[in-house]
Image (cartoon, one colour):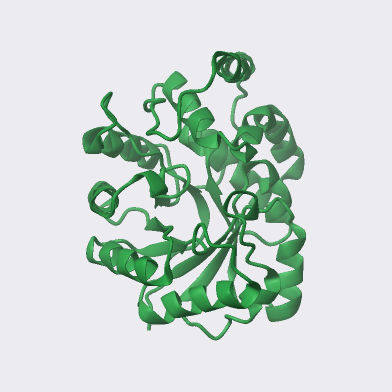
Length: 305
């Protein structure tokens, strides 16, 4: 039987740090992770989209996972993204992640191949039954093209390891449709920053967040206010946060988030090719958004311990 993960709260999609020559900087990545834990996040997702998974070798992914596990020291769960071209490669990576001490995996559909629904279902079923780690299904059709629909997920309800569903489609109707099919079988996670409050209202109990890399305390406060039904307070914070949260929905989200992280002194904006630095106009846009946000940065309300 697969172990359980505390699938609740804000799990930043942690950035991977690089040196100027684009080599992996494990020490800087450890520093980023330590800062997030210090500022009260509920969990960590490493080697996800924001972590530049597909730009890392398997050996590098293992280094990042081992670093996260070592820094976390069991204080928060560590979940590793698994994004591979084939089902067999995904199983191999998941097993390597397990050996590195990860608490769970976040599995993307098989990349590059445009799968039909039954093929996407088979990918998740095969990986889910080949490993004994808790598994989060990651739906992000705008980026990865293959949708994991409520119908597909409902067909996997018998796979014990599949425990959670992260939706980054932007279509929050999926949560209601899934609940109508299989009740509370799966734990629901918001996956797109600028729909987090709506997702919580519809049953999400977790949030894999990009912008919480730069503003972990604000992300945690927004999540907890919404989860407690304190919507008037959540809305005020959401209004302030939204221009930045929209960055998570852009194709260049990684560059945007890492630039915000650098401005906050939490990491480097450097990304590994093929991701290149933001063009000057885009960089100035993000810098202006950050300047405006910091000038109006709100005091956070009191939250229960």
